[in-house]
Image 1 (cartoon, helix red, strand yellow):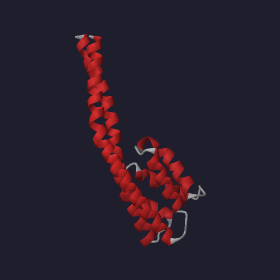
Image 2: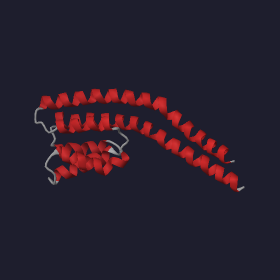
Image 3: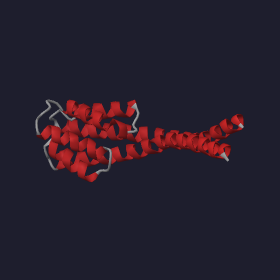
Length: 172
């Protein structure tokens, strides 16, 4: 009875690890799509509504879901209170607070940093170019992330279950 319970716990824990690792691939694709939506909404707020950045970030935060909702809310608050000098500093602090909830890779975050730094320019044409370039790059990153998800998600789920079975077979 104890062996069966132990075997079950081993298979359950390794399966859980496999499913958690596979979840990262699925969540990255979702977050890249959410980021595209957020940047599109931010584009409307800045280019067409001509809102200040802190109001634009606040409005975008109200339209998007977690973790970008919290990211944009934190950026909006720090810019509103003028506790931080630059947008990039505000972004880095907000990113540190939300890092555990963001499944984006370093390449994705670097693109986001470049985009945020581009918002500090006051030129409307520069903003349009920045939004367009970022959207196109995000579409490419989303396609790559989708391919990685299709290739690896099922692999890690099966790997978790099968590694648990292997451990059980070796122990019994």
